Image (cartoon, rainbow, N blue to C red; front, side):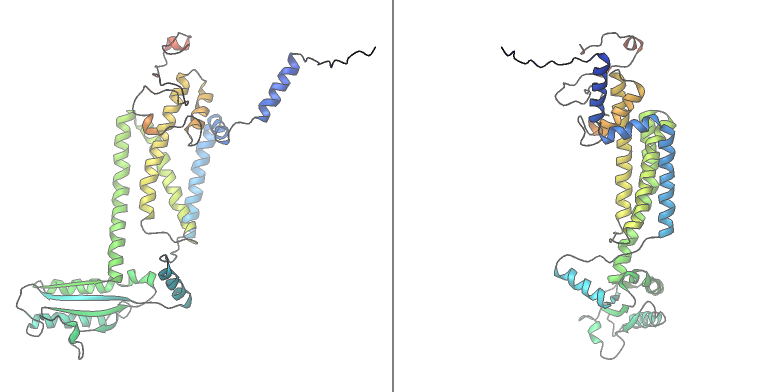
Length: 359
């Protein structure tokens, strides 16, 4: 009779099981963020000095390349028309107007010699600035009666700013100074300049002043707040250093982006505000995570790596920093696990003392 064949399974010993377990761990690799975090935790000096070297290299490269101003077109058909005119080399000069107005009612341009003298001074001053003003039209000229208002109280001196559109904001500066000088000589009149170029210059000035103000006040205020949180200058300076180097790197990289894409004048201010906020928030987030990992009993290097890995958005257990830095009664960050207080790691905890809330 034929005996049924029964397969014989060879049971491996402990060495074989360890080898299979090791192979399985090799096949299941940890996430990239966790591997980078683990390497950084094990090579602290290399990571820190490597980051500083990268920031220095990017900063020097950005300074050497310099920024370029790319034209920014509107959307739709108007943007297509602007793009076509730019390719054909058609430049629309900026139109500027100088208002000359009597501050007291009853004075007219025809009957007030001071207004006529101011109009003559403005016209003469602009005529001496060929790079800032062309095609000057004065209410004193023949056939320019349309430049005087119906009541005769106001008059306009019109001119155009030559040059490319990107340079008109800078080219109009001498004309603005000349008009301001005439205004200083005639305090009884209102003499002011307005137009495309002067408006753009005023907007850029406001943005530049705002950026300088934010640059001068954000760092001291942030340092004061961090000193109140940490109580030590070195500990408070670490998040600030991370944020400052991140902002410096981003601003330097913008010089490369500006060669292909238009970069707005307010981009630097936005980068400063967001970079300082995110850099400091990320540092506090990591510190909180590492404290949770150490309180959970993990080793120092392992806790640092796990904290950085869990700190990344999209990783299991990710929570914003504002949920982690405000109070001490949050859980370890795993979905579905009730929150529990994080005890202080005292001597008894290191010796294996039972903690409330854990089995």
